[in-house]
Image (cartoon, rainbow, N blue to C red; front, side, top):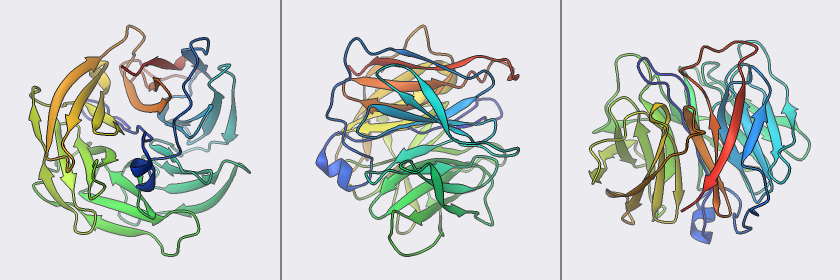
Length: 313
């Protein structure tokens, strides 16, 4: 969910569609379909610089700012939005995931922080600061913990969900993992269909990796029908279907996974003329919602930003 040397990055994307997915922490249920009359374009404040998006059971989406770490909530029925977490100089909000209990887990990008926001009270309930953090990029909910990628170092961070006990832990990435000497490497993160491992996209090398959360051992996922997923940012799995947002390509590449996510077979791709470097995606009903990070447009306080919705097909 952020910028890379030659390809800005990022992540995020979202939710799950079945009970098994929910048990692994991919977010609240997305059973309610979005109605055709709901808007498909959501203006954001000038200068907001969106990076992450999360949706629970609906009809609200939460979007994070790369500019200052603020978070906005948008009503997907009307397009109206408001700030629920104020930003601050040096802050960033990249990856977002909303849990069933209303807690929103926030990756802090260059700030290196991990924050937890109670969306019922709009108050922070926890803040973590990894000592080795470089760019805390994206997050997924898995088991009883939230898991975060670090784009500048071969390590995952994990913190307890809800009222679970325990603190911040680090899990080094090993095995076949490929870490770039500088810039972005790990970006979006998801879970495997069988719930036994994590999936991480490496943006500059264009590869997907299956990662054992206990050991950090990474194995390259074999791509069939596609050479790579360069500029891969946010990941979103719906059942056995994985959506990879390829930001600067203005593309969502859709793969069929086997249960263990050892092979990803190209099914189709999704694009839209309204895409302007989308970074992460979230699902509600029969729609995907994406934020346009506009990495190819110089950011200024007056630069316009938005989020868009496309059919989940």
